[in-house]
Length: 366
Ligand code: F6P
Image (tube, rainbow, N blue to C red; front, side):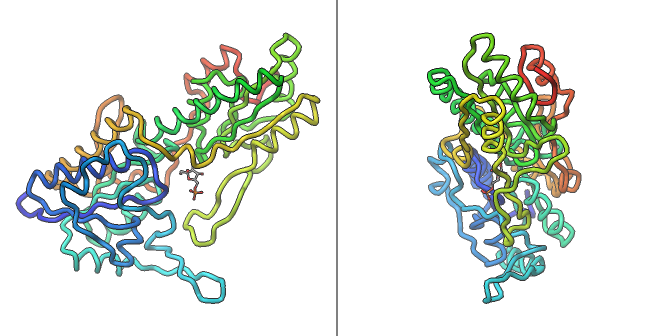
């Protein structure tokens, strides 16, 4: 710890339940160890714009159970590919990595803890190559980060999603409807798979298993025929028809990852209604999945991750991201993680179990 005097913490990418729990763990452990701690505002944007503030114990007290991030976040500030307005409604991408390094050096940061997803880890790799000492902590409700079995925030999102699926049962059964709930997760189906299983959804659609409408319709009709007058479909936003494309809700030119998925739930509900004559509705759960207080599981995981990040700092093991593998907290080089997506393996035991219990993934006849 001798050469380590001052650290910075930032939360990059989309907000996520448990971010504050990590900030609290890193900052409390560091302050307790005699370090100075600076909070960087709005992720990498704060390093681009030189917005840093001192964090003291009082700043990180009482935030364990609070959703969001006290530091603010941005998913539009990749220093290698930073969008700057040209003034005529257009944007030009600039490389501002040297500016970020300059601001870190000016703030006399000996090390940086970056809490984020794949975009944040990708940004970290660039900055490590420019000489910054960085530790990564994996965050995302999507649970799609490489090298870790779990990311904090996922459990809370699944809890919220399962609760929504449970609640639509009431209307589905009362009105004999097909109810499709579109869930987040980007290009991975973890939220839909876990929430769908937790609430006993009849159909689970995930990006990893392309669906055929006829099989979803067949499942709804089959249930109808045996007197189960309703069907619940948990659809990941990245779910895709066989031979088709993912549904895009919007394209954000200011974001390094410009595609925002959305629309598959509505498509499935409309097509199922047309084919089967069964009344169908769709719901997009959206950012509710990112909101609210983290579950106790996520609070504990985030605290463990944050404390382990502190231990890596003290040990001088820079360039590494904290992970949980096989139930153990460990770390891997950040470079190993960046640019990869951890999707659901199609032979995952949960898929096998769900199929055995009659759940459809929309890829086989019911
Ligand atoms: O990665 C988290 C996530 O919530 C995804 O599940 C979703 O596709 C995306 O972010 C939404 O991004 P935004 O908040 O920019 O709409």
